[in-house]
Image (cartoon, rainbow, N blue to C red; front, top):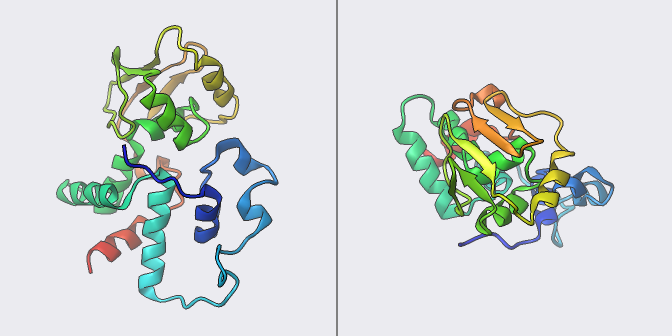
Amino acid sequence: MARDTGAQCKQCRREGQKLFLKGERCLTDKCGVERRAYPPGDHGRGRQKQSEYRVQLREKQKARRYYGVLEKQFRIYYDKASRQDGITGENLLALLESRLDNVLVRLGFASSRRQARQLIRHGHWQVNGRRVDIPSYQVREGDIISVKANTPAEPIIRDATELTAQVPAWLQADHDALTAKVLRKPDRREIAAPVQEQLIVELYSK
């Protein structure tokens, strides 16, 4: 499985805001953005030209890093979203939100997407009673998500639930039983990603 192994705090600093890539650490004073609120590199504190293309590119990179998706896979999501009915940008975010690793974070069963991917790859989660070990698995309306019986990862999952303040309305979670249900497709107003999707559409439409 291809994945981004780069320094996560540098990714947040590059985008100039917290992307919460490290879960609980991002809420402390150890957060890279809190300690060094400027882009990484020798010229991080220098003046940067804000061209239209740069703004659009940074928005695309921000979305990619927020969801932990590599460039080729992100383009595949965009192409799929553009073929669907409706607004392309909203379709794109709905596809990214429906990834199993992201859903576990939204439900509070993982503190970060990287942790969620590890739990999925190690076979700790099931969808509709069947083990799923693909982080990009697309959940659908009516899917039942549950933790594998007697999994040794249960303490880690329960620790993550304590950090969750609220579960989106399109999902339903039972933190005691560690189960959840997908009620429907997410609406744009329910997606908390710090992304202006129209800029991404403009970038790919050039």
